[in-house]
View 1 (spheres, each protein chain N blue to C red):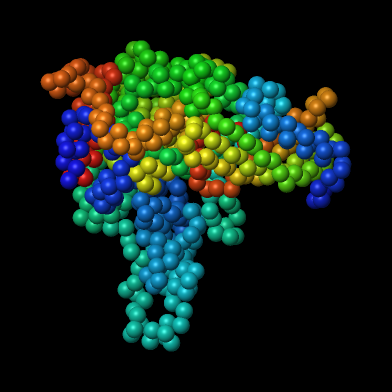
View 2 (view 1 turned 180 degrees about the horizontal axis):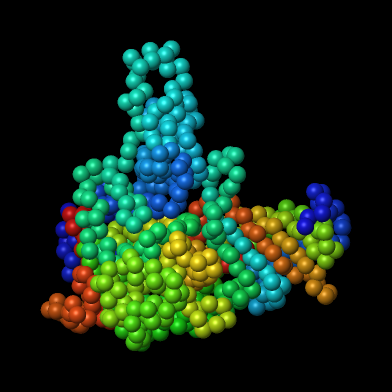
Length: 175
Length: 438
């Protein structure tokens, strides 16, 4: 689906729009405005975060076969969001303070004019309570944006976390 | 030393500091984890000759490999020469492991096969006979239903004796057909919580389900954990393990297995491999396994959430290890497990159900861990040394049980079982912990 090896110039309007999409999205995730966030996903969204494993160079794989942290569609993401609204999701009450840092954004043309492939690096800072140690998750993301009427929506996201063993008590957050 | 701690534990009054105490953790390492059998892997994780995974028993790294003849071995992951880790990957396939330091190499059965400059540096076999050298094997290594266990004690009692009557219940999770389980994962993550808390929770804490997991019922993912239903279940303890069950609506074995979502072909295979007694626990007594813990730190969960957009439910199984890192940190290793003979669509649906409920992103799990981290943090202070946590649920002040044990005709499983909320299993687990440490 990716058309060319080279990323779009940084002054290309499509790159600017893709970059803005990710930064706007990071704001929604920081604010835990998940209802609004769900609306930025296409109905056929696939949201996947494989489990990374350490393998020998040349092994040909670096994810655990058949296992992921997230392997989601719109329904399962909606259920996760609905849970936060129940008033009984103790893990996020009191809520975490979140900051999604997004950088290294590169945009690529796709075969279809209505799609863009966007790569980014992400660092999530998460802090809970007053004296708990804060936690970080670093990952690379590969996104497919699709033009839906007058705006871009997220249709695919592959999250490549940079740790085999996560140093965060859970992933009751999105990346 | 610590006599008072252990005495209090045995009467169900738990000194709060045992959940965050460096001295006790040192004792656990020396007296418990150096002796007990601990789970390291499942045979299905290394299906082909040459496949290996690297797993730890506390600080000790082992290569769990299927050698080129198909034999499964556990070898201490340390070069005989200068002590490097021979294998620094987590998994893969290899006929040989070569040390990155000086290039000593070992066959995947542990035999030393290559020493650079063997003749010049050692005078050949006269100086260092290669044939006599192997990576240190795990002191004790055994399997049950494909679950591979290591004990650091060379004189450990046989694994089957260690597990004892708990095997009856293990079969429900790990042997649903002649081919047994296949595992995927594990997801691994570290939590700032003491390892015993999760082990206790899975062993018997039916009492937390309606409150901790209220949100799961609120969103309609799960039909079962309503308070009323949870307390109709029974808890059981049999030798080295115990767990919780749900009481199912009336019906026979087939109907009740269907009620939790098993397709008929899987039910037929269960009937081939489960004993009459095992089938009667479901078919006649009406109890369906839920969470369980095998002492010291291996837990299981079997649940049946609703499928997307329907009232149909589907079961999943997860196996997890509470790997102690320190007195206040645990690495959770959580596997998805499914019967190897299950239909492909069932495996896929069951996997999705697991991801929604348990593991690093699971919605049940998220709220559990939040509680356990908080407990551990609070247990590290000095006031916690003055507090005895009341873990006597199910006992009257004269130690008689609030609810009588189920008679054998109402509960066909071995060990002791009783209906309703209680902390018999948590006490049994911690009493065993005290016995090992004292």
